Length: 346
Image (tube, rainbow, N blue to C red; front, side, top):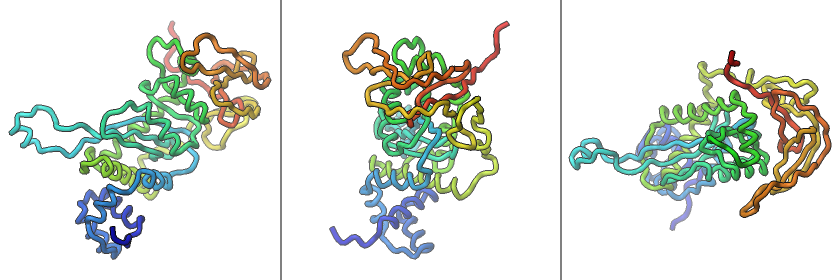
């Protein structure tokens, strides 16, 4: 291997330009030469797309967003591979497509409308298994919205241990799991409906850059999709569309009597009592009937039976009807108003 004469930022710039304008490697090389006076061979970009690690792309994506995400949403989608033409499929008498799509699982910032983290798989994989990996890439999240496919007690417990409150509708006939029972009895549909933002971002990403990947290897496909996510975040930062509503002005402006707002300007929950409980791994913390902070050991493996409830801190708050009380990542008691849809029966 020869000396490294091209800096990494030049290679990343060339790959992002290639995806933005949908160019080939040769035309991306000419673009860099004409507009930036950067001379390199097209095979240099091709080798860089295969060799640059995923951690580098994730760090570049993290540089385009804010360090703290108040409301996040998770979901997955698929991108078609650039397979054979329809004429070839007709000649070989093939009714269906050849190949399988590339799976993209991503986290988005609901307020800023940006992609936070992402991971790609060449073969289909359960989306819930990728959430811990995505959360480690950007751990500063308060609330995460997920659909019914992410309804798993182990996932709720893992997110709760790492300071993120999970909101996901439970499946039919839910009987097990403390967090799942909490979602079954006290579910905020008005908050959950904002999960559709992740579907809108996937749609915008495919309309801007196409719904298919042109690369053949999973490493180059990962670089291609990360370049699209980075370009979308940068473009959204430079150009704000006039048709986009400003949700930060009216996103969950709620006032709880005697509460202390977490953050001014559209906070989703408010602190009722500052307790400062230090959470211990392996325990589920909640507010009991008497308004105190209690905890119960999570069921692991073959352990069965009812867990022993232990009071950690006595706060003595009075619960009000229509509010969801929980312990935030700082150990304080927070409350959020629940929105119940529908009309009363006559």
